[in-house]
Image 1 (spheres, rainbow, N blue to C red):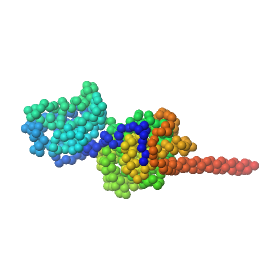
Image 2: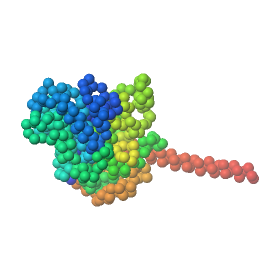
Image 3: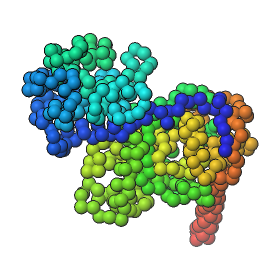
Image 4: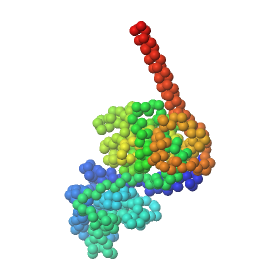
Length: 495
C-alpha cells in the first residue's frame, strides 16, 4: 500500500467532512411535497394559513409568517418559556411549525447564496449542543461560512419561531418578538439594502464538495498528462458515451464535484481479473445536497425495475432501459413517483485508471457541469488523501492506479504511438492546464504497490486501436488493388 508524499495532494479532507445529510433530504422532501400539494400529514393545523402566506422565497414572506405567528400566539396566550416546550402545547406535535422552520432555513440559504446543511438536535457533536434547547427533535441549518468571516454559522429557525410565539410578558429575558427582527443578522447587509423585498430570491448554488481545483492543478507536471487522458475502446465508435470523452477538458476545468451512486454496472468493473473500462448507470444530485446513503436508496428502487413492466407510465421507459443493459440515457430526471428531489440518472463511461485501485465501489465523486449533461469520475489523484487511502485499504486489491500509471509514463509512455486517438489531446490538456508542461518531479510519490493492472488496462485499448489501424491499412490496400483491377478491365474493354 503506497503513501502519498505531502506534496502530491494537499487537499483538505473534503470527501469526509461537511457532507450532505439525511436530515437535509427530510427537509427538502417535506418542502417539495408541500409546494406540489402532495404533503399528507395527520397533524397539520395551519396548512391553509401557510399557503395563504404565499411562501415564495421573498423577504416579504418572512413578514407574512410573522403575522401568522401573531395570530397563533393570540390563540395560545398563556404559555411561557417553560410550558411552551411541554406536551400540553398543542403545536409541538404539529408539522406547521417545523415546515415554517424548514422554509426559513432554505430562504436564508438563498439570501446567503449558500446551500444549508441540515442537522437534527439529536446529534452528539459538541458544536451542536448549544442548539439542543428542546426535549424533542428539531432541525437546524449550518452554512459553510459567515457573511464577513470564514467560519461556520448555525441557524436555528425553530428558536426564532418559539420566541415569536411568546408574548413579551411571558419571556424571561428580552428576545426578538418577530422572526424578522431575529433573522436579519443572518442576511447579508447588501441584500437587505438593495433587494426588492417582494422578489423571490434565486436558489442557492450547487453544494459541491470543496475540491480546491487551483491547489490541485498547480501540483501537476508532464507525467500527469497520460493520467488525465482516456483511450476510447473500439466499441465506443458511434456510441453516445464518446461525448463524455469530448467534454473532459470542460469537466476538469469547470466541473463541480458531487456524489454519485451506482444503479447498475458491468460486473467487470468490480474485478481485477478483467481490466476493461466499461459503462455504468449512476444516480446523482445536480444540486449536490443528497448524501450517498439516500442515493443508494433511490438507486436500489431504480434497479428493482429491472425485468419488470411497471404500471406507472413514468417508470416504463426506465424499466426497459435498465433491463436492456446496452441502451444509453444521458442526464434523465428520476421520476417524481420515486423521489421529489431533483435527482438525475445517466449512463457514463468508467475509466478504470481514474479509480484509486481500478475497482469500482458503489459511491464515488463525479464532475458535473452546467454546460453539458455528460459527467465523469473525478480522477482519484484529486481526492483528498485520507479518502483515497481508505478506498484502497478497504479493498482486497491494493494496486495503486495513479502511481503505477505515473511510473509507466516516466519510464516509456506506452501510448505515445496512438496520440491521435487518446482524449483529450496533450495539446488541449496543456492549454487548459499549463502546469502540465512543468518538468517531471521524479520524487513526487513515495512507495506504492506495483502491479500489471495499469499496463493491461492500457494495452487492451492500445491493441484495439493498433488492430483497427492495421485493418484500415489493409482496407486501403485492398481498395487500391480493386481500383487497379477495374482500371485494367476498362482498358482491355476499349482495346
